[in-house]
Image (cartoon, rainbow, N blue to C red; front, side, top):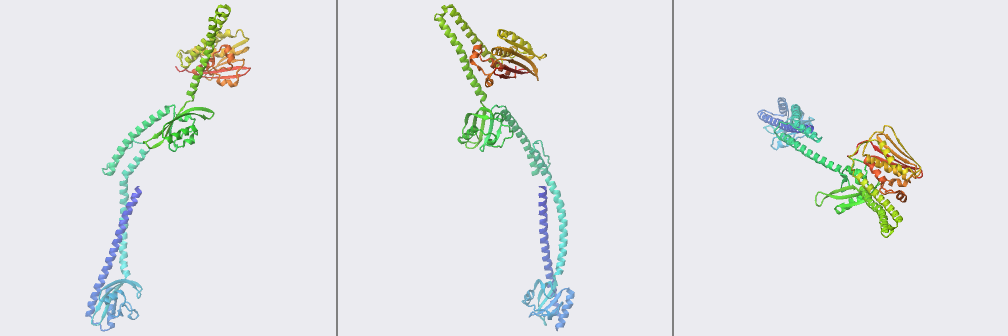
Length: 586
């Protein structure tokens, strides 16, 4: 801006100087020409008076007169008769000169007017300034003409131009220096303002302007300082609101994304990326279609946009090899009643909820089924006993034994259900202490020894020396081991059961391996589901409730560990439990 201001200032100054010089020079030239003309007229009138008092009897006297006064006036003098013929000329012989009757100045003089004119002289070969006066004497009737070369006027004019040019250079130099000084002085506060604005644009709202001027620039500086303070406060408020909004959106489990009418993403939260497994992070401004291509998503969007109403739908989508159930809620974003800015989408992952609902439904169904079978048996035998079988001691004793078995089965089933509920609710988990796992394994083998003493089984326990004590609820770990070892005993008729315990990379590892019937690979993924049995008939015969491995799984998850199954039909099964050495949630 300083450069433009400087150039503009110089342009105005130089334009003014040039215009002034032009008019000065033009006026001076006109004045000079007029002075010369007036001078020639005065000289001509004097010559006319002299001619009237001088005896000019012949052409020789006239030529002598013109030559003498030509030297005195330093001008060319020409005497022309009333027919236009030249009688005498101080520079040329009249006989070689043309008739001058039609020369402009001569013609006017012949008509009685004094006239001046500048034109080219064919005789002299130069531009001359001519002044012609009417001539009336006793001996001559015609025109007296005085002329000088234009070079004489031009010489004076050139000198005038030189002085004007010199004055122009001096004035221009002074104007240049003054322009530079005043533009710098004028631009200094503006530069200060510009620098301050640049700092604010970079986020430095502490920038202040200190200008002592009381004019418009001073008022502008004061207004700028006040604006900076207000802008700082507004930005702080906006930042706070933005931080709060981002914190709220980030803490939500539901995925949120807003799109405009062209389905370009305006904003989103991290849950949106997580639910739909979007790896790209910078997606603002991109088309939603380029980020995720799911039919149900765009169906809901288009319906909401077309109807301008809230739409809520639930459906399944495939993300890689994983199937998810999502609930999509679409709501138009309205600035006014009639103006729609876009669509707000809220996406919830319903997979786990629906899975839990299915599990709960299956659990209720399975519990009902598991309870129904022994209750039906008990009720049937009770009715039989009531109808007279109680009088037969042998039959009555056999029926009562069956009722006792079914009752015991019901008791263990209810106990397992209560235990599973207790583990899920993390009850009694505050009763924890450091326990030696090898000692717990020994207690479990002692408890279960009666279960295999009639089978050709060998049970081996191998625990590494120096296994660190594990912080846990002793009963939970004991329950885990009882279920795993009891399963191994149930499904191994002969052979060997190995229980191993060791420390590996800050994990407590417990392995229970048998040489039993094994498990087909198709059953392994569902092995830890509640009431799931590989062979229902055999499981019922063995007296199992179908909740043992589910309890094991929940205990492992309670301690943030993991469990793996390796099995081959006819060769045996191996359960590997890994529990991290860290405190559980209290």
